[in-house]
Image 1 (cartoon, rainbow, N blue to C red):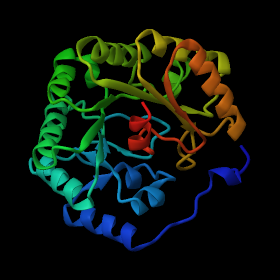
Image 2 (cartoon, one colour):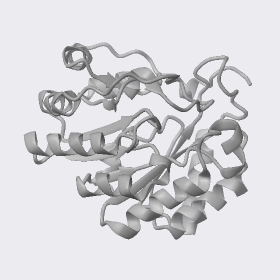
Image 3 (cartoon, one colour):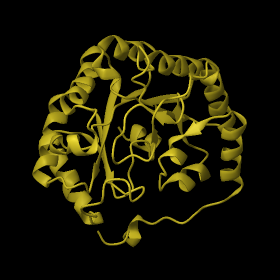
Image 4 (cartoon, rainbow, N blue to C red):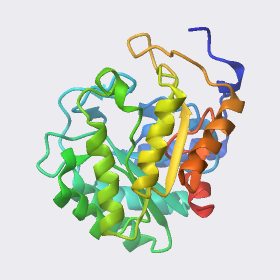
Length: 282
């Protein structure tokens, strides 16, 4: 594939605010998906005093071929992490916090209890802060999904990531049907907003994307995001196509036609990018 188009490039922003964010994260020994996944929006988000917290370590039990997070044997969970996250949220002055994690198939509950503890800790210290969680699939265990639901996040996000035909290539340890059922279960068993995200550029067709939109509309998923896949390294899946900015407008129209009400489709959109804006526009 040709070199990264100019519209996908972002300059480095280094201000007192970005330094403050890095200091608060470092002093609390916290990780962010911004760093671990090499997010192109990192500097912009740091400049706005926000970050997406990556919990339960930086090593994942799965090996998705699009993701820059290390795969292997994870670290032990830090029991102080929920309190530290809550303190960081307060120190950063956040009004909206996004919590995600590596996949922890090694844990009995997949980390659901830890997510719940973090949500509760944030609500206890900063009751007015909205909390969005972006979780793994917990192997489809509904008891674990219930654990997170009972902690009452404002948005429950789980990413579909790509179209069904690319699962074996891109995320072989996941199942499209399981992720779809995961989102359906949340909607059927709570009044929490559901959200999901996809990447484009891995070789999917527009017809395949439309089929996913239809599936998501049927389960009444509230918010859908789409952004361009960018290859983190030569060891990861290659980019098959760079979508032009105008193509996201077309995809938005197609998604709306299926009944999806709230979308955020753009070249640099990521699941947690501008999450508060997306939530407020819902």
